[in-house]
Image 1 (cartoon, rainbow, N blue to C red):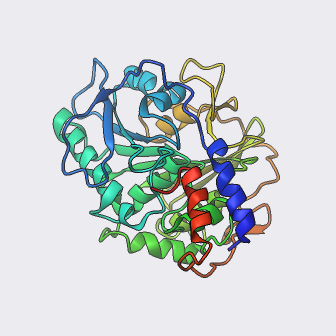
Image 2 (image 1 turned 90 degrees about the horizontal axis):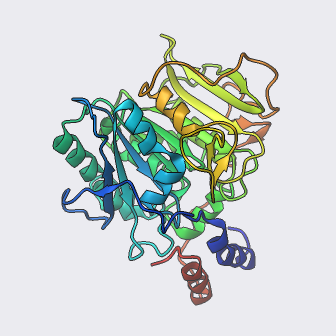
Length: 374
């Protein structure tokens, strides 16, 4: 564990680091879902259904980041605009302040990240209700999220892999890397991330599912100071073994200054892709010149629309690509058979933190000030 004064300072600064919605007063395009089950995680649920929704349409589940709202994230990312054009349904789970003062999904709370428990079960109940209510295609259900929503996307892909054909994690963290708030902050900074085999085992142990596994699209800013870029490496390491791609060398492509890696199976199907967005901080990459989404706080103009690309990766939109021909890429490089980018190996597992000692009240006050403790 980092020294206590450093940890407390970071916790106190956390309020200013987490994404702001930037659209709290803007009218939302989303509608309440209504009753969807026992809702043990006490989450809200919103949906968006295009006027011309085809029969057996796909479903995309979208998870906002800390301090954001479902409607605010939809405005920024532009998912409902894309749904209008291409005919798929949207589900937006939303956190409540009674669960987390900063509206973060509780990706580090044990009872919320287990199958058949807490927030994970609530989201699974929402998905099943949407499929039944709108006669959606259960084989084409996808999930994406930013930051804490990205980490909760990891949770859902691990605990309910049979529900999802694919996931997209933006500035998120691997499943099972933290089970307490101090651990969560360490992992966000890139400290103590377990090795790939350990992370893979945690996914395998999270459900009785044994495959096939969801595809994965990963996005992370190379200058992210909130969630370390090494978390994207760790997610790749967690899922590469599940897909049997341990020894597969990825393709590498360039889009402007950004770098994309693609891992394909023996049949040539893309199972995992990872984007390192050059110079971008913490947020969702957008194309400011596009008519999908709106740049704002933590919705960042990076001249590439993650929303559009993710939808294409999931085959929800027309074929085509923003990808240029391969050329010399950024120096950040995945190396086949390892767990590193740019020569930085993922940190070895560190001992699990024990109970807070006599300084507990000071730390708890800082945690509450950061909005991370109930």
